[in-house]
Length: 268
Ligand code: NAD
Image (cartoon, rainbow, N blue to C red):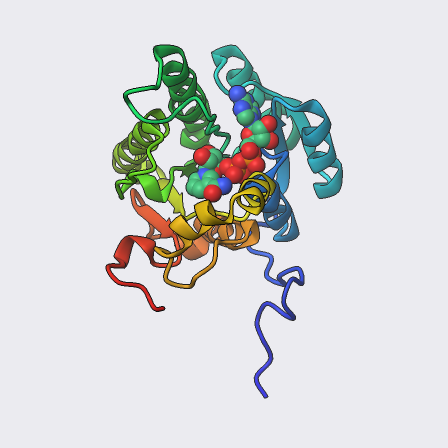
């Protein structure tokens, strides 16, 4: 029998591709960010956990043996301080996983979404990525090395009749920005990719769909595997993009969506 490379289901992966690297993770307190902070740490990285939620952010840092830096990713000075602190503490900034994001209920159809909701989502989901890249890249230029992973979404490449108009537009912006930066800085040893997760089984989603199974079904029918992703499945892709295994993967829209974006008719 061939042994699985990742061990039994749910076990910590055994590869250590990130020893000696410093990774900054925004939105590290929950969901995809937390799973990724765990995964990057398990592969040997020193992890700097950034979040606005002090309790959850500190917990993530304790668990991963890293550092918590309270950061509102919409604030330029705080983001600048985040990357400076990472560099001062660990001596390098090798990986930036710019992941914090929101999808509030008042961001809905264009007909009902007000300018405040529109702007708040743009700030947290798109301006934050601009700020994180702006403040991470100079360290990476000096090192001649770096991997930036920006969280977009499958909705950046697919239209949804269940609209969240500002969210979708913000994620489209993340894709375009990541592509441009990946091209601009490639000859300085810096790779910039956008990751596009499909719908993920986060606590919020579970709660929402437990209350409203029809709403879950409306979406699940479009997902070829017939289930949502687990945060650890996104984290595995983040670790790959962060590592030298992805040394020729740059400026891409990296889909981790179970095939939603390739599907017409799904299996029954
Ligand atoms: P989550 O709500 O579980 O975690 C987001 C984290 O970001 C939280 O810890 C929150 O405190 C933090 N955060 C929010 N605003 C912040 C701010 N201004 N500054 C710093 N931190 C802030 O979300 P998640 O589901 O893990 O999503 C993470 C990313 O993945 C987001 O960008 C989201 O848009 C994207 N995404 C999620 C899904 C999904 O189905 N969950 C699918 C595709 C893309």
